Image (cartoon, rainbow, N blue to C red; front, top):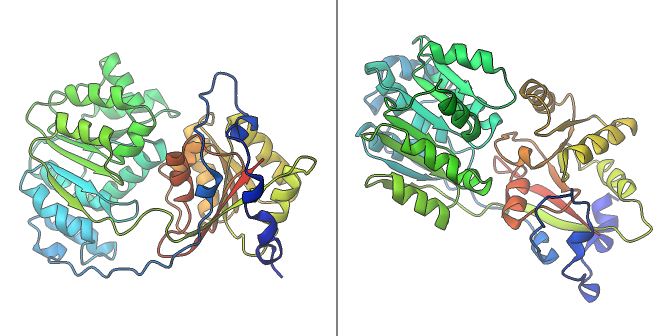
Length: 401
């Protein structure tokens, strides 16, 4: 009998012994860190629903679009003949010059949706584009995707992210790249240094706007947008449309066309449950028992701090698990190597701070484990969204003291 079958009753939240509203404050919290939002443990419990995949029938093929034959050849080489829903609806609008608001989840083909029109403009004129992403990992994924779409065109790009060589970034910028991709903080650094001037950039993309604003980048993003050419084409992509996102778009977009391809809520196809750790029991022992279950194949474990992540990762390695750690204190090279090993199954457990909840696209993660409770429910949704991808059922467990 599996761990899930034999321990299901003991893991369920006991409604007769509901913890006080301060239960999360008993969990480890670094000095000076913001107080965690109270989240009713009931919100961590939900059975997965098998969401029927809606088959989208595109109105166009890539051949129908007025784009450079080189881009079409590269799409064909990647095995793409028909656009996804977001691509089919966005590309014609974008090629006409309109601003676009795209409401779509990760994994729907957003990068090509904004990338193809931008590459077309860059290949036919001296147009330059700024693409802003919330995390280093997402910025690099975008750069790789656009490089594959523009292969053979001598398109130049610069990736401006923290944790990587400033000298290398300066050399990229001196080459006057058509594409500049980066995170808000590092882009702002280059603007302040005078090494990046945005007056001549006529295209801007904000990818995962909601996450960017959740991470506190609203002022940086607004400042960057104000530095761009007044006559520009803007693309705003977001999984959700909340008040902060709407206000930003209203300020900086010009008569945008909204395209929504949302098919459901994050978490619908994820089995969510809690793991109660009582006083006197060993939290690491409970985690160990979960990880040795055969159903737990590939997992991300979230903890609060860089130090906690490193400590837990080392403890798991000592116990014989193939584990590694990823957090903001590591250099970009170290983070890339850890993520690469995880993708290639050289390690099957990735212990992470919330940096890994944003911008990591690994389709075969079976489980997400919240070893510490998230800062907010929004962070919880981002965390568990790492599993249950590509139409699969995922699993999320949250430890409760």
